[in-house]
Length: 98
Image (cartoon, rainbow, N blue to C red; front, side, top):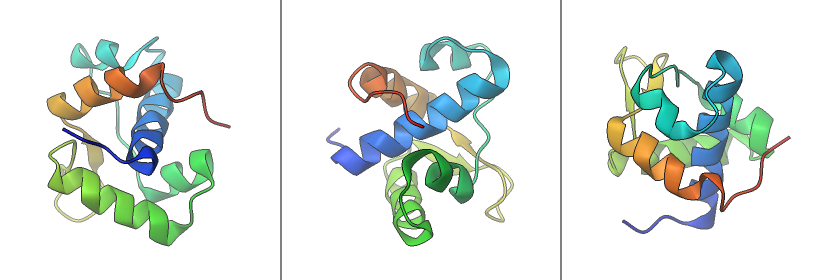
């Protein structure tokens, strides 16, 4: 799967947000305890992307099956298993954010 640079940064932000919350050292650790809950503001906070850019990136990542809205109402976003693997692939490629 091909990801844009901004999609890679957004994935890094989601995984970094999760690691700060649960102490995972790398995204692959989330396979054991998927503590990757996030919302659009987390992406904006960590990347500096506008809320519109972040929302568009979330839509693109959702279409690629890398994130999903577990609550069904836009409040319970998390990485999928496929998303955890993709985040692991870009973890060392994209530098740590803010």
